[in-house]
Length: 249
Image 1 (tube, rainbow, N blue to C red):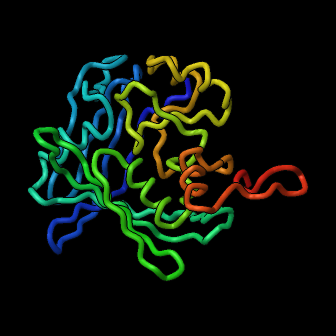
Image 2 (image 1 turned 120 degrees about the vertical axis):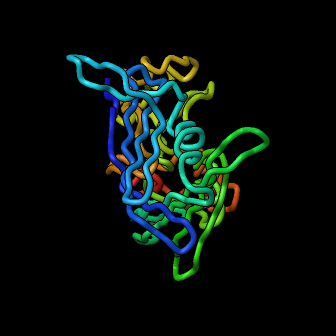
């Protein structure tokens, strides 16, 4: 099992004109069906989870919420002052069609909201391409914001959220922001698992709980990103002398 069990995310809490640094501790349950979040800053703290006894008498944090986005929407944002946003600053490499378009800072803003009675999170992504500001906003999962980025710049970002090796299960209960399964080490394994809904089985054949903004040299644009570009007239790039098209470089 290649499960990414825990990490700490450096974030900012934004309320009105105030922007303060904070840290968000993320711990995933070994069975792949829960996550604990602990947010700490000088001005506010919030938690989505519970303390239980772990191995050897050590305290282990876990929660029965389904995934990272559930924990944010149902556990963290209700504990923050109304109107507070979470911001993360990233550096990403952009591509447009088959061309690299440079490395740029990208700001991710997450806010809490409701669709009917359902608590959700809303993602806003901001960056510049060739001096022009790009901003997209979508609710529920960052996947929809990534699609908007692909449509606007006729390309995408060389990160896991745009990668062909990154997958989620077809039956719900996963999130694109912090719940991707990476099949880079065995791409054929996904074909065998795509009709199975067993989180432990998926985790045993992949890297699980992958952050959408992670990146590695194995990047390959996802089919959904290719389809958007081809629908907009970019088409499939020509193969090079080695028979490998520039999508895969």
